Image (tube, rainbow, N blue to C red):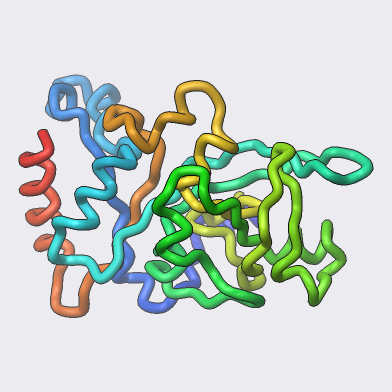
Length: 225
């Protein structure tokens, strides 16, 4: 029931019909005569560098944000290390979705600019309840993730899972902290335009349509290509 309910239920955000998923396409294969091959390459995640360009150049979205695929991290500094799941997000991720924190705040723009400079974290509501005993003093507290100290700046609202209707992360971390939590080549994903590691979501301006968004983004994509 949880799986079916999660997949079929609409996103519980303000004006969810104005939220738009944005994908990259490998143009050399998108028109392939093989439908399975074309489908495979027709909805790819976006690279961080392309995400920034789309955000700066578009004129159809009031906000354009990104989140990484789910990463496995370790909560350290306790008697027994615990596995947790995290998403790296751009600072405007929560604002674009239109949600408010349950406690504290979400990320500031300056906390997502300098790589590795701002180890801050937003906790999910359930992990805050379960692993931190719903401590009212959680905001401002320091926790260790992968043996690095992070300051908790906020707690997400109850039930918030991000854009995955079934499985959500335990914590959210600014994308600029990628080197501290990612593995292998993914640690350089902020600089590698070929590293398709982020899911992008935009919120349409009131006066814009989905067709206008497609046209605008296609024009920007042609410039980037």
